[in-house]
Image 1 (cartoon, rainbow, N blue to C red):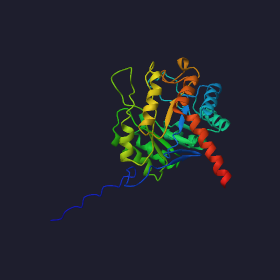
Image 2: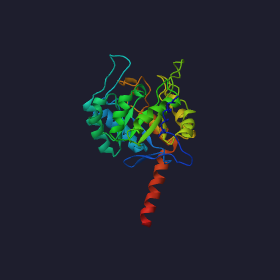
Image 3: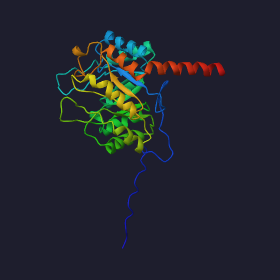
Image 4: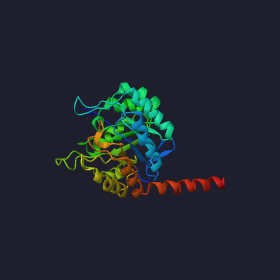
Length: 288
């Protein structure tokens, strides 16, 4: 009687090995996973050059590390704003150059990858596409840094397995993002799972950031959620910012005003932290 050998289980690249530190993912001068706590800020969607530059300049002045904005949009309704597409990519690239901020935008389709990868510094895979395995593979093959956002109904194990599709393409430049789980209460959807931050950090070496996206009317929850995420050990934060959130073409009211964002940054201590980093850099240069 012959016995068939059991197939070997693959060694998962996302799992943390003993005594292995968190992987540091670099996007130009920005580092995720080194303790610097980058803030990624910008509007849910590019609507105009003026709108984007207003947010970009404010983000830069407040100490944000990266500029994020939607270019191609996927709305729940077929009648919703679909984004400016290619024009938005040019505007985002220009705003990044003008402010010196690295850029990131969500990729919805593999057909957009070459264009976005040529002009934008970092790719984002949104929650709706977390298990779009073709897109994950194609994005991984670009070699670009990627943010992979956990889906609203996905388990921790499922988001880590989705990460494997990118890592399997020999692209280690991956940052995980906790955005929130779908709940039954309209006042708290999507509910950010703060416990997912330390849970993922125990299992994986990949950096994890949070993106609080409270429901319309719940923007006052942004600050405590941001504080809680940082206290839980998150490696960074995404904040949606708009000059006039009540009249935004996308975002369902879940965007901060520029003034509100500036206050949040002050309370997080980001400007002071950036000033201290700059001071230390100057001291190091003097010693060289």
